[in-house]
Amino acid sequence: MLQQYTKEFKYNLTLAVPVILGMLGHTFVQLADNIMVGQLGTAELAAVSLGNSFVFVAMSLGIGFSTAITPLVAEADAAGKKQEGKSALKHGLLLCTVLGLFLFGVIMLAKPVMHLMKQPPEVVALAMPYLDLVALSLVPLIIFQAFKQFSDGLSQTKYPMYATIIANVVNITLNYLLIFGNFGFPKMGIVGAAIGTLASRVIMVLFIWLLLRSKKKFHDYVTGFNFAKLESRVIEKIFSLGFPSALQMFFEVGIFTSAVWLSGVLGKNHQAANQIALNLSSMTFMVGMGLGVAAMIRVGNQKGLSDFKSLRRIAISIFFLTFLLMIVFAAIFFIFNQWLPTIYLNVDDVANQADNMEVISIAAQLLIVAAIFQISDGLQVVILGALRGLQDVVVPTFITFIAYWLIGFPTSYYLSLHTELKSTGIWIGLLVGLTASAILLYIRFNVQTKKKIAAA
Image (cartoon, rainbow, N blue to C red):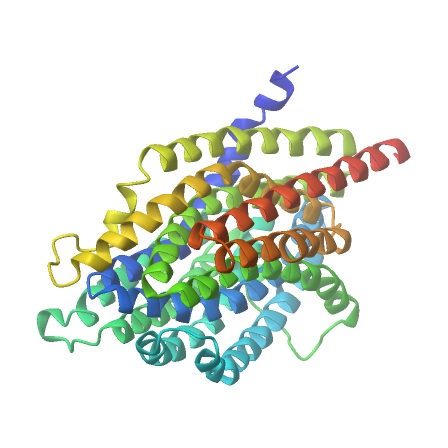
């Protein structure tokens, strides 16, 4: 019985591991910024957290929208329709570029909101110049996502991974030179971290395009675009899949962003602790995201073949694999909850010792809650991936809104600001929202796949 699911593990991991490493690459850009900036002090770490909270919301919309490309390319590839795959990439690239520029403009217009959010004044002052450059980096990042989702759709998940590895080397190198002013470079603090992020994302786009162009299988797909000739049918298809997918990611990232803002109301140490716990849990979430992409690719392929029995079996095998991996991550967070936060701060810094010890203590408590929600978080994102592969996106969008904003956020708000739980209360709300999402999305998947099998 179990073997029909476990026999899929090897191929699922073959697809998912490069995606996971690529996704972790995006997170490592933030991890490098956080660890290096954390050496400057808790105010600087809180400023990076506040600036990134604006960028993460916009980034979620861009990345969510770009996921529409993968199931369309996967379905076209399985059906042997190469021209449809190229059309999905061309139109997706155009839409992602326009969306990236639009989101950059929105962030610039939204900057004054920082002054109205009851955040510590020194944190806001530090965050402003950092935000300008990191917001601009959204444009190349979302263009990269179009190429990434296309490559994933052809089951070639390793090439985006190579691009993110290169980007991380660039980012860490520039951080080292510009944050601290090493080797004669100017000491720019957190603005240096922002320059590193922007430069690394520009290089990431150039690298993946040149890499794909050099491969025979991809060359015809990624060259010879005629952007003057657009098809409204394809734009409508990408938009009908991409917009709900963007909202799904927006609703989830939005509730985690609200955690940054609520923790800022509690003070800079709560905000710094929240950033540490958020960064650590983001890394384990990327494993779920990678498996979600594997689910989207494989479900999209089976949909192209109209084999819904295999589609259901393969999807459930990925759910099961995710469940097992998330148990391991939960154990790591439980066991090392006191030690992990010390990676982010200079514990030998006498001047900031009291602040640093408080941040470590708060973060350790948050990691206990994060350990508990690992399973819910992993499962909900993988089930969403499977539903996207089915091109079922509208009802799941409503489910994510209900789970995060009608259940999770009110819980976070009440427990953090109206009880003694404070930051821990924020994360209990996240736990409740993620669990509700996982349960409701699985019910949706179960109903939809059984209906398709019965109709076949």
